[in-house]
Image 1 (tube, rainbow, N blue to C red):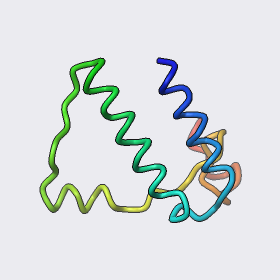
Image 2 (cartoon, one colour):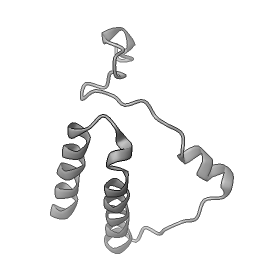
Image 3 (cartoon, rainbow, N blue to C red):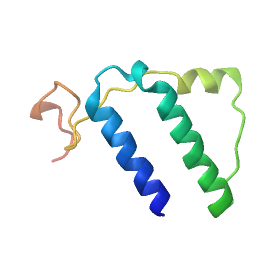
Length: 82
């Protein structure tokens, strides 16, 4: 899908230009909603509402990883691959 490739490039650009995710949060949420709607329309996916516990899990911070899969700042020792 061409439009999702464009969204992917935009997101990549946003992530490269700042280390503070709060500065791009609104743009990322909008792009995520767009991508979700593409899946609904093209692939028959559906939107769901999470209960409070599940929603709380989705709000947890996840460590960022480098393009090679390393945890940021962890170096090669953290690489789980053999």
